[in-house]
Length: 131
Image 1 (tube, one colour):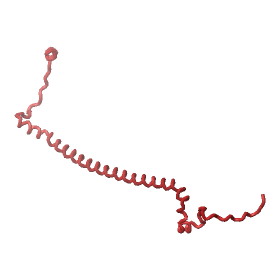
Image 2 (cartoon, helix red, strand yellow):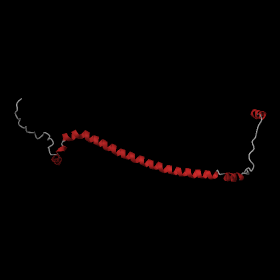
Image 3 (spheres, helix red, strand yellow):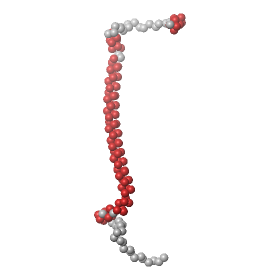
């Protein structure tokens, strides 16, 4: 091995230019658009395109979920208010005075005396069960 310096080879005009050391100049001249550079970057461009499509789809999906959530919340509020209204109506209707008034229309009267306990003997129980 010798310490000789090799002379710089002249590049052919057909040979692709490598990126100059100055990146700004590389962009301004448009040499980054050469066929080999574009073809080499295609997998990365496809990957970025795929990521962009996924990002857009995710945005649409999120928007749909938010719309469904709002719709469900509105429905929940309506059902809750209906529940409260129905519960208060039931409480009013089931009061003793309301029940007595409603049964009076059917001809039933409210008892004024306490209810009586009916006691059956063993013989009476057997007769009822055998019937």
